[in-house]
Length: 617
Image (cartoon, rainbow, N blue to C red; front, side, top):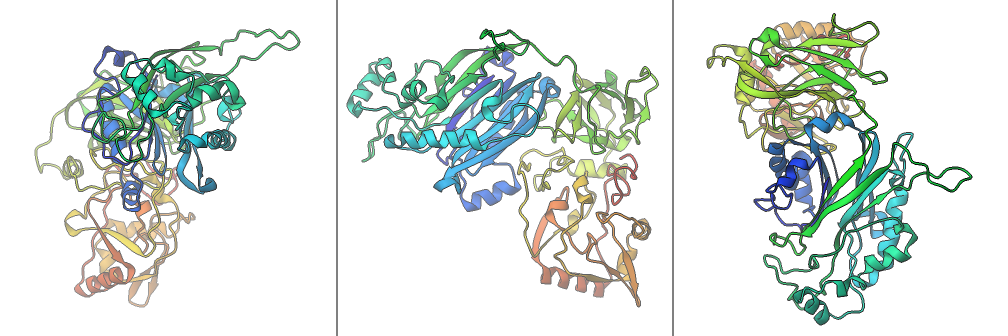
């Protein structure tokens, strides 16, 4: 496991971070997971609004760099400028379960998130591990405040489940970040002399964190490797020279990486520790700073750990079986079976990923993994829950390439099963030969595409994206705005999010549309009438009522209340106030046209129905 911490000082990302992640050494082949903690990421208002719609530049950089090495983003959490990202090799994903995140603000008495801690906890092969990234108060005299804030973070962060509800309840805790501990007593001249003379050991006993580890009960059990690298703060930006400003800050090891192993349980009445299968050991293989990065006044710090334990999990929750090669569409059959005790959901799906994908929602296409849609596998023995589904020809990528299938569990928000890479070799269709291929070709490299994800979206964002991906945990509600594709892009959505099946907020007034406007939908007009009888209030198409010579679309209709959180893919956007949008509708009705709303051939038919009622995508 590689752990990295870096206070980036609101700087833009550098062009290359391969040495920071130790990707240019042979160690990369042995690394299974990488945790990256950032502090002071630019979080000004205009930057946060942009990051709410798109992935922040730092996260994009690390995903771009790590994906060719088969690292997938497992989880991420952000609190203003404090970000934590956890990556793992794709073949470990099914064994990383019970993933949860939390954050605690400690700035301004707990009301501001410039200081505090963010965490990602997960079960790794049955062992509970927590990564905690903190940014504690600055300045030499604030040591007691740092102690209180850390105790607050440990107390406030609680997780759901039967085991490891608190941070220190986990089998293994990695604590890192800009902890802001300073060097006491010694003056700046002696500190710089010790650094220049490479006698750093003379500074260790005056380091506040080293002192605290032996005196603060809250730090009991935390371990750290030797500080054999120069203090990482404070530098003149763009140089390797310590602070030359009027303040002349004393150099300090502010950026640290520690770990703690949960003490084994003791036998009752004997006082002797009982060995168990859950015992693990940690060895630190590397602990260093990286002086080559000068974009911030802090230097990044990295550590590599070897964690040894007995695996408590032998098989993934879902096992997927697939042919070695798909050379014909009829070979795109996926067989899968679930482990005993696995809690499936009607919102589970199987994604088709190109080798080198970046996160679980970076798929090429997907198919619902529902038992009512799939056929029972004839090869499964009695009592074993086995199913098979088949990708449609339109959903399959054309050309040659290596791909991976992954079963996404909606209950755990993680991939519960993956295959080994296999080959897809399908002939490319000639340009313009089939209308069903237009959505795939038009979105191949469309940099204008924006992705808007609803909170905890059950369906991933469209797969063929490179630079613009939304990793925001939620999308802010923009009251009084309607989003509509431009005329040149009013086409097929690649794959709408199932989140759109939920009810939409009733904040946009009724729109009156002439009958001929709705007539352009053709078959869709029939679907509108059929959906009127649907008992679910979350239907995509709602009641259509007759009023005189025109049809009235109620306020529950998506035509009347387009909301950015319920749109899966918007190739190009215009933002308009309600009165402007309504004026546009009235003008269009006078001219006798209205844009047809079409859905992708890969979209589930009957989008307004429940998962149980709809057909296979």
